[in-house]
Amino acid sequence: MSTPTRFTDPHAVDVWDASFRWRSGDLLRDRTIDATWQRVAGALAAGAGAHADRWRQRYIEVFSRWQLLPDERLLRHAGTGRAPTALPEPQACLNLGAFVLAPHSAAARFDHAGFAGVAGLSVRLLDDAVRLCEGERAAAPELSIGVMGLADALAALGLDYRGREAQLAAAAIARTLAFAALESALELGQERGPGANGVAGALAAYWRDRALPRELAGPLLQHRRYRRLTRISAQPCLALLANNASIGLAAQRARAGRNRLALSADAALAAQGALAAAMQPWIDAPVEIARGDCEDRLCSYCL
Image (cartoon, rainbow, N blue to C red; front, side, top):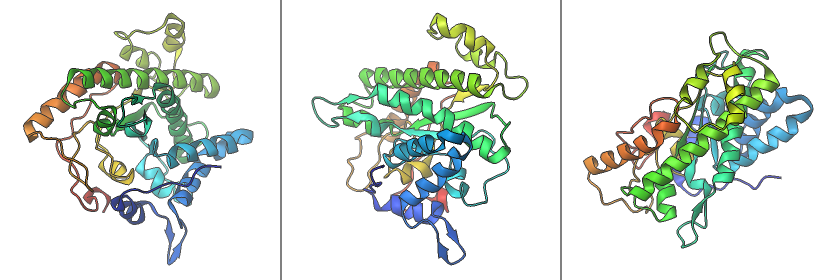
């Protein structure tokens, strides 16, 4: 049984109610955020046969802990009978702040093992999403598994957003994401078969200059399900839903009593660029630099 989801920011409640809460005419179908999680997770796991309940519970668990946020299109439509007939480049976003153990203490550390487990799960989630929307034999050659809340995580770890240690931490997170997503992708390729034409060998190109274990090299060259796995882009609506998490790799902003970093806009952008450069070798698509942040109000992206 999953722990009920905890909202800690009023803006998160607003964006859920305005953008993701299921209403059918005058009937309120999602009475709580946990009902939204159950709706989405149930729809995604429905094709897993005898294992459907296992995956449904796992999806609900990571949603309710704010560790993983699925594609906005899924939050709005999965389980409502109005799922999109196509889901190009499906997205999932891992909230890095949710993986810091003993935050803001001398014992603070990033939970790489837990993060890897959820990163791997995100591949299955997006594969399930494409099959839900496009049919049992569909596959998505390009997934966009990314992160948000980097500034939150660095602050919880006691690291200076501008410092070398922050860059090393960001690179280690990107490496964990890359390996976890790859291993899950290879497993799903064996379990569910190849995807679209033209995928063979495409994923291997991203790993040419990465430290790939020999035991994965052969399966990767044979892989034919995905062309790309990871892409870090700004997801302001999902960040706002996740209790006002910092967006993508961007610096924290002053919200709900949160302390603003004492940085000029140019300095913050330069620091974000350095973090992006540290992560880029492990990310399949160019890392996006967020040049703005949501205001301290209901997110305009969600309206």
